[in-house]
Image (cartoon, rainbow, N blue to C red; front, side, top):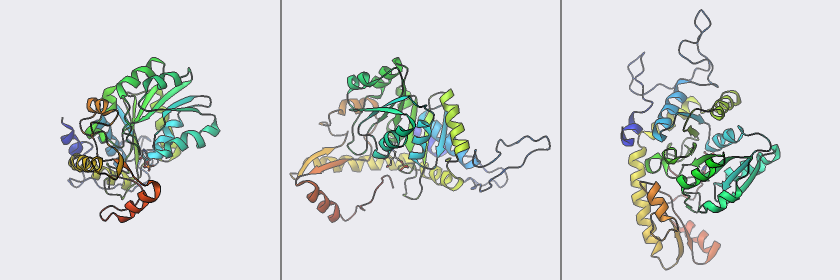
Length: 328
Ligand code: PLP
């Protein structure tokens, strides 16, 4: 099925009790047992799972072409859960322009629990290879990256890392599966801040992990999700899934707009540099062209005059809102 069809239909259920075409939000925290003590509908207690989270996970797994997905209260909660599957002394290699919150979780939070880490340049497979150790369990890449729109060659780095026994995580928040499907390029895990394009309206926080195959780490991740309580709530799951229904249409418009803006900025005399993979002078434009079917909606640029000029220009914009986040 085409992605445009999947975004509309995956995880969709007609409510059996009423025939409603949109799923109800199941606020129940607990589910009835059968006389023999079993749970005939598969749900016990909402911290562990609930119908709205299951619908969302089914959908996200289908969109990324994965075996299973786990939805969380935020992208950072999903990141932390995957890092918590590691043990003291394990090593993570990450690209140096990952979202600053991801770096902080790896270094500041889990560093004190004995997690070791090395940060490397995204576009340089040789540097990645040099950083791998026998204890490296995960290679964490973000492509395109936030905020410098760096591009890493997913297939190439996956081959290098997996040959040395490390699994590869791709933060696919910026591209979304509409433009890039890392699992089909060899990655083991895809991470999303569903707060961004999936939600699409700046009104819900969420995160998700999608796994290429079932594994021990996947089971541990589920255990962390169920026992730790950071799984996405019924209402948040419902909102994210509603956002996904229009994802394909929105991403195409975002990308068309971003390409035109990037070209305008790149030609502007007061702009020093524009970062967008759709510009042919992006250093990894060719790699992006190989692994992405569109360039995405995010760009960044540097203006002449440094910090002061940048703040002045941001303050003078009329359509943009100066606020953190994207995708709404
Ligand atoms: N990954 C990327 C690329 C992000 O941009 C963000 C947030 O800005 C995150 C992860 C973290 O997601 P959240 O804010 O939903 O915790």
